[in-house]
Length: 478
Image (cartoon, rainbow, N blue to C red; front, side, top):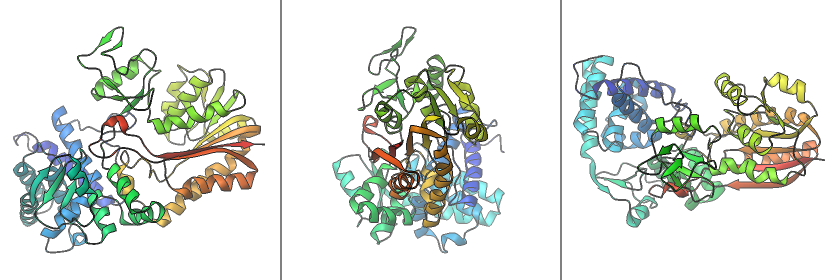
């Protein structure tokens, strides 16, 4: 790495190496996210970079992951060969450079072009740098104007006959001097919002074109960090707790009562969570799974099993609602299981166990079984942009098979008269209603209530109205 290079050069080199890794993996991108819904996960950093450069490297990679297909569509008119025929380092340089030009408005286009060209020369060969230079300069020249966030711009974003409008996360848009996007309406929407075309076609069949457009635009939002303040945290006041004060309130009230949008830095978020462990980072849709279904139980459960507990957000929620219950919590991922283990220090009722131990200790005894099963993540694609590109009929079938492999043996954990909560962060009937119907029929369960929640919030909307999509159902074992 050239230590005498201009400010930001090192960040761009790191970013382009990361983008190359993504290009080699596409469509199976792997990305933790620059705005993870779990604020305890510190974004990736590079020890060689100072904090400002590390932030720039993350921002470049983040923009590429979120708008991978949009970037290809904007680059494609300036190529003399088809995109798949380009060498992967050339693809990475074009993606990283175009992402800075189109989506990082504080980055000078010349700096983005120069860094991409020099990286390509070293990573591949000098001649490849010439191609990158020519194409990126044409991409920069193709941006005619930035349209402000307003009703007129929102109407343009919904117009699938426009082939020159690039929607932005803040409700604004770029107007290009060329027609970069497809004439076909479904392909146009897929390219402009960076979704797999097969996913867009599937949604059109399930929800209609208008709702599909709304869902696709929703996924462009930069999702806010949403918290559930404790009694000591004021969602609208300047004072957060007796010993903490801010020039501005770090939490803005969400439209869902009891929730707030975190407005301060990630470091302050971590400090707040350390001082207030009762505080949860949780979207209202996720929280509703436990909050709305637990009151419907006929009695307070004594033994609860959380079989796909993740990092324990819902486990913690259950422990707070049922402080006298024992909660067996497990997850096959080592990092997530370690996070579960930390919860027992504050909630003695939480017992982290291996999956094998759960099935041995709780067989036929659980008063409540929580099945927050793996899914396509189609209700949280604003938070999980890498999942937009994976959708296919084959992958959906594999997800459904995995859900059944988890859920079917787990029903044996439930005691007679016990309850099952089934939940996903998906909006797909095949992963939700169809699975619950199958479970009820196969195991003689009674469906008490089910609810499918569509994502809310569009680019340019207040973060106060944002919410994820998802599904939950309550079943009885009679």
